[in-house]
Length: 377
Figure 1 (cartoon, rainbow, N blue to C red):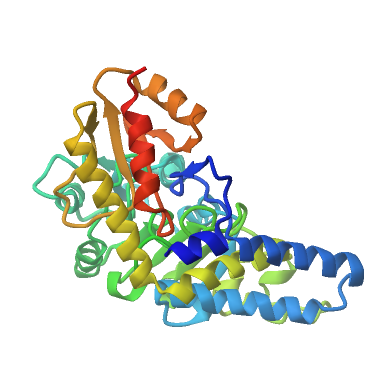
Figure 2 (figure 1 turned 45 degrees about the vertical axis):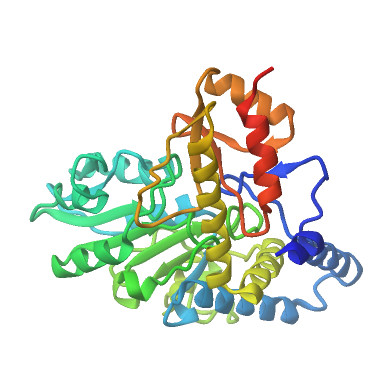
């Protein structure tokens, strides 16, 4: 992976970037794609718009491949994870007394839309994932005959806990419950298979492990599940015949494009497509292997340190790219300030410091970051 580091991630030499679970740096090819798109637009305006539409089509197929969707027709390009979650929360017709099961550890994006349904008589149940034999069982323990949907992050943003999505999907299908996955901490870091998980809805922003820009994400839905959703946004782009501007009467688009009500974000489409071309060129199997290897290396080194304390669960059967730890002497705020001032990019999360290296980060970088983290002035 050293060649990809040199060719695609020409970061400042003093910088150690371990914050891909927040906002990732772009690969060089992504920056070049933006420059070329901007230059073309500046010089020619919309002369090559048909080529831009082909780039949009390519992105849908790249995303289809990345999550193993049955069809590109199941892919909608959305502004962000929150928008897609809101499409589900406010697209379903709820009955008074129904409930949604999730965890108490969710990022606000996967909590606020569901909590806002309280005025419709919908209960949002938050499981303590450590309250049962497994995190998955903790979710199942809150399910009853009124449970309409289980919504969970594939990887918990604050702890790095990775859920067994296959097991949850099987449970949901057995009990006729909709299954919604916030996959922002998985897609681009580990292999992801919507069909294996039997997911009804999956959503993720592109600016974390997918190495893309903010402002563009993916929303996957099965045909059956999306037909249960009433649309909450309307515009020229979500109708069946988008090229007929005099379309009267109109029909909604038969595919997932029904969730795209207006003009596409062409700038971000070119950027995300370039980023995904790198991931697909390497292959998600190889990327997952490197991401998990980096996380396991961090865990081992932190456990060996006399100055650091591991908060992540080293014994989890499923590993993610997130590792969380604290210092034995200094506060999290002091350590975070020290790391930032030393150009180690990380996050203050989960009661400690969160490192989230990607596939291109080297073991030498991880060693340097840990030396700085051990902090004994």
